[in-house]
Length: 418
Image (cartoon, rainbow, N blue to C red; front, side, top):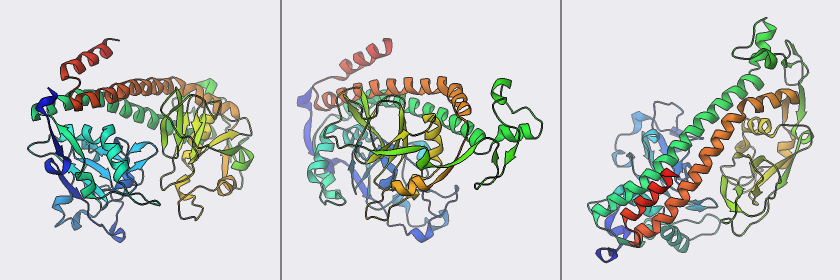
């Protein structure tokens, strides 16, 4: 019952540590060295390692307290909230070994607070509202350890905490499974793209008198059998070199006050951040991050809305937007800084880039081959969205005691049978 709970401050029941100021001149790229986990690695509910920094294993003496453990909850302290939500996550086994970087908080449970329950507490709407209320600073909003510890909540009995975490963890496990499956499918797509459009494997095979590996005769017939000279070096015959300005235009997104209602996905510089009722781009397409240290390239398979931290791509020539997406992934948008105080992507710099463009028929064949895989990704995304909505509706009711665990389990069973 809710009456069994007592109101506490988070600081009374949590073990909180902030990270170490690792010096950049000692960073390494060796996979044998531990990762450094900072605020830039944390997104809403997960960790990303696109630009991983590492620390020499030989220099870890005296840093024992900064080693992260599986299940640790981490929270960015600089710019803790972004358009996609609160920058918090739980450390998984695939994220280790890793060390905690300064201006990042690591939270663990104590004898009174289960760490798995803590993960969902930090992901609650109430905790996010607390952080938004106490953060200070305008250019870079930030929070302090004491402000984190000031959060008040009703603490359930320990056994109930564990049961709540188990129920909600079942949902998150399925969401994580879908995410990892989609990552695997995406890696397969990028491997095929690189083979066709970067390494030119089918052309090389035909030039050597061989049948392209794993390719049917109809598809192989669309590839030339020799290379020609170009300003970009040797390229397949009948393929062309163009500036991006000749192929696409980057259109500005628009400000949007609310993005929680509707079925149209809303994208910002870091990816999908919510939903809206009306699309800004009326077709499937590509989103290019415009502002921020991390500016991603994203693809929407359906019409979408883009806020003012990103561009969307409009084609000026016959192009498959899936091909555009994978080609832009290779361009390294995060390296194209305009030189302003806030890292940003310049349209003029982007337009000046050159790219090798295959005939539209080959682009279309690539899309046709991978379409079943992309449909599977979309189905996984939709299932994960449904599960996330269920988790988010159960979470405040379970935390407050309004809904007992047995009721939540019944709702989960209903979803499983539907």
